[in-house]
Length: 374
Image (spheres, rainbow, N blue to C red):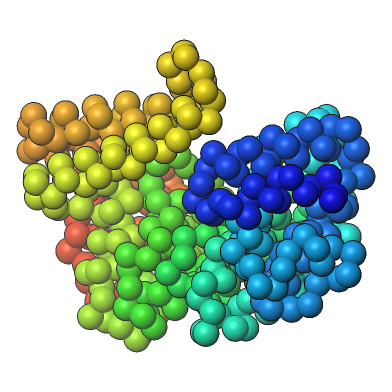
């Protein structure tokens, strides 16, 4: 039995969503790598083998015993566990595992491409493709090698997002946003969802909308800078091909990320209650992982701050909905007026939509201009 045998045996009985079991495996791997960093190479041999198993391809004899073509579930759980940094605790471990990724880069990219090619019949491969792409986020350091690896995987990411349209990829957009042709490729993904599918609620659409114009979410400086190019191109595509989606476009990519969508009180209360339920569930899993008698603090995880903000917002919505609506509208207007790149994004959309007009978009820009002059 290899050094990975016990952890793989446990993972064979686990589910990909079993956070605690994944953490147990990562802790075991941390001990293995602390004793022998050469095992990073062995880990990547198993990553390739797991991907081949998911695609029903033959694994190399050296690692064939790790995964069986008849148990793809084990391979999927392993890939979910390995797409992380929890076991990279030693000094210099990122550089060493980056070397292993670089050595197996061609094989990993080939697996992702093969999964994209069969996606029409194999939507079950979405989680696996996501895990393989995430390796390029978790297992890269800084410098020329990382830049090369990011550029390589970025070429496949638009196809992956389109091939698996209903899957929420963890780090695909983060990696894509840093590619040379980022604005055009992100625009291609958006055009697929909005123009081809008529869908503005997709997870990728929401992530890009928040990244370019987000009011309260953690900022994504790269997406924000690309905002005018991305949203201008999308607005042009909507004007030319789906003019009936004009209002939906503005609602999803302007009003929603700026947190000033004119929804009703009960709908907003339900939305924040659902958000809180999800955040508290994630925090509960984290507390079980820590197994600490002390309360989890914001130093342990940003989830604590997210929950506090959501609770505060829910109280405000419940106490005085009209006041809350006015305050967040005022905040959005002031932010647009104070941040040239966000104002430029809105103006790019307004210009690209012409001669179509959006009352909401025009009003926001007019209010921002008035706020700037005063």
